[in-house]
Image 1: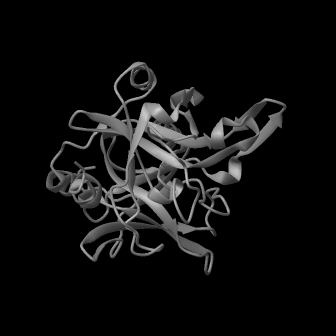
Image 2: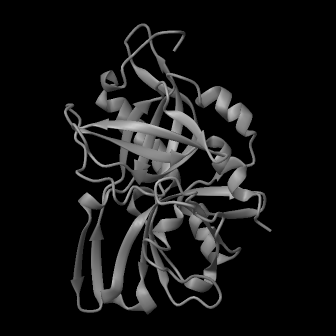
Length: 282
């Protein structure tokens, strides 16, 4: 914004709503049926549509599908069915055989992971349905350039997901109705928010419960959701804000405890999701 300084809390609601709708093109709400039983539906987090090379699928937190979360069984021998919500609440039912999960990393701790997995959607009719509804963010980009544009001090960013606080699931015989909200929470990179540990990079964002913006009591359900870096412009004539550029910069996977009306959202950052996580993928 040409050197202009602005508090994230001063962003107008209209801009935040518009940006949230833009990011919704890539968002996925995750849910699954255990063994295909309608009364065994479980929502289990958030994800983002990405592509890498010739592969298309969902990047999310590993614990959304595995210990300490559920054990969702996907792939040729899988027995669980994915129920996904994409842009505009459009639902997709994905059979286990339509996807392959690539466990990208081996976690070392709950607090720092690494905590990432990739659900590849196999070529065919189901992948065509994904492409007709949503958009896939390409990870075939230089992480150094992404960092230079969206990883510096003061850069605004948005954490996206589907908080479990807003879930409402009703079962009716052999059917169910699941209600959820696509939410965007806005921050700016502060001093010490970006750091490395054991070779992995992270970004943390502070949620202040004493402020005026509504926050859920827990960010459970936002795990696996994307963090988007943003470049903004404000029109000098009318003060209107617009989103000039954006890029996927992180995947949220952990929330610290709320202390003194604050908690921190922790996400894997640029180098981890563009490079490190993929080094063992065949």
